Amino acid sequence: MLKRIVQLFFLVIGGALGIYLIPKIINVLDIGAVPLLEGSYVRAIIGAIILFLTTFWLVDYIVQLIKHIEEALVKAPVADVLFGTLGLISGLIVAYLILIPIREFTIPVISTVLQVFFTLLLGYLGFQVGFKKRNELLGLFTLPQRGGKKKNNSENEEVEVEAEKSTTHWKILDTSVIIDGRIADICQTKFL
Image 1 (cartoon, rainbow, N blue to C red):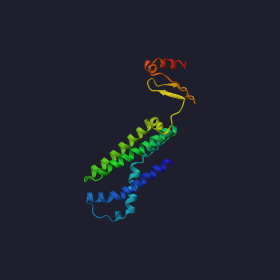
Image 2: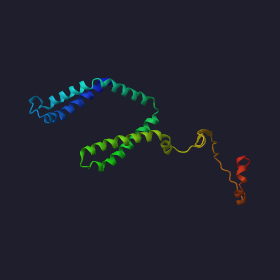
Image 3: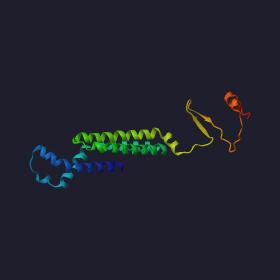
């Protein structure tokens, strides 16, 4: 089924290219008027057949690539896919905003190349940032938890953190004791 979809895609693209390019090719070759190629349906059929035959060997590789990507996405955790997609969307939005002044260039080839370049680059960077920074982004949306496990950044090992008690016991201390620092040692021994 997927192979048929890819072949249909090539047929549609070939038809569109046939409608657009065959008149330009006739003008460049200076053949003159060809009555058979005047109709857009005929040009679409010729373009579809040409592209289908030239890319017939490519269809199997594209199907394998799509299946490989599908397997990788199915195996990936939902959070990875979600944050990667959000990063991709953010990158494409930034690319769109950057491309607004670039579209005003009077040189059409440079404008088109820059648009494609910035769209691909910023889309890729957005996906990578969203995918690799998912834990930090997830931390923005979650509340800090009491107790549980906390990651120690210096050694990258998990350390148990005791849950805070719901009742707080106030202690009155003299400033000289606080400055002296011995009270901190006593608190660490859980004597107080």
